[in-house]
Image (cartoon, rainbow over all chains, first blue to last red; front, side, top):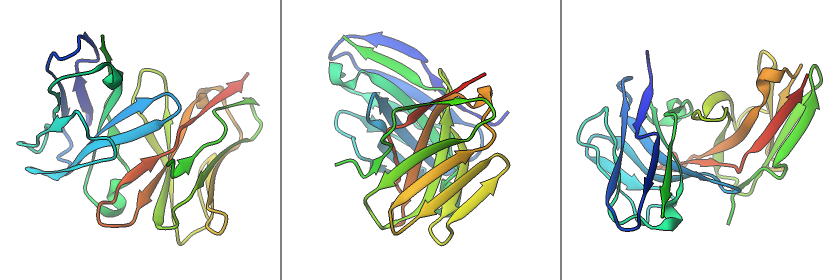
Length: 115
Length: 113
């Protein structure tokens, strides 16, 4: 089954404790992105990757890191989480640029709470 | 500065009637427009899209209308069904080099049986 998986689905942590949210897709997609969803703000892009070893900042990259060492994986790293990073996070992938970028496939989400 | 706005946070419609969801944008550089649907505890799923060279695209019960002069996008669902109850996000693609996808704030649609 074609899908985007994220782990963990739920995470409660404390300020400053490094964490990684994993994202994996099995569709051989080139494009991958991370978004956060907050009430009244919709989904905002954190980082995106156009291919292996090619990443760039989205709209809200501060406090986050990403890496793309393999095509299928795109982990999101919070080196020193803070309470304002409490949010619902989504990973997404798509075939590539242009019109195929339209049909982004989203993972089920990771609800992160930073105390 | 919010480039994409969905001014109605929620909408309630009777089953069988038309649902109209609206989206306004400020940047005329957007060249592709999409709607995503999101159920609770799931990720958004792509619903329908339209290119800036068109003013209407239809797919079954779903029709998207684009009014470029008014910078306005709408999604019509006819007839509405209880299974359509979800949050709907409009999303716009900046036609520049990054092909960035910019989402609206979402509208919660409730279709009453």
